[in-house]
Length: 277
Image 1 (cartoon, rainbow, N blue to C red):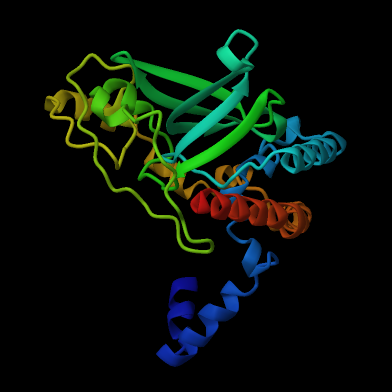
Image 2 (image 1 turned 135 degrees about the vertical axis):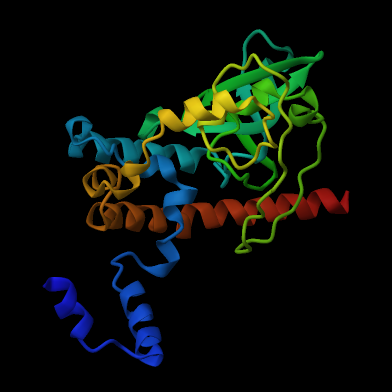
């Protein structure tokens, strides 16, 4: 049989296996310095649904996105990052409005990419969703760069307000360029049911034990789809191939090495001048 034939084939030794592994890793067509770009700039990746793809529209959108990034600095941030966003508002004093909060969600592709900040105002949870490339945004600040254990923090809506409270006069914390982004392993204690979503069915890592009756976990087990992890076609449809990613990241890298480097130098100069005062 095929299994018997495979078992009779010579197997590589430990030393050969170690030499083969790096060779396989280096088969990637994306340069090493661009590997993390899909996490830093997720909105540049096109739709995974081919029926929604349009090459001309995607190129025009990327051009507009890079032009917008030339006008204002859009820093690196993730779900769990503490941020401040200043927008133009004709009805606010000074014609500007600034909101501080934790990023609980990022979604959307291209110019339609959105992120949501959450904070507590007057003992009430407040969320504001921004279009990342909205021309009304005047400034985006990262006050504390960090990640969380989950891809979203929507469960903060069902958690005590203390997990969503951040001072509006919070000072920005410095982060060494090139250093790894810290991961906050805080586990949130949710309030008792009822909840906005069935969190027991989402396999969340950043939530403490939900302390639910066993019947809730039994129902969650019935609707699980563990076979999807072996569905290669579904995984293929959810991934952008390296051939499609490479020209995108080359364009982003050129922008990063010119415009963003100039923006970083200007920011350092402003911090030095502020420190002297």
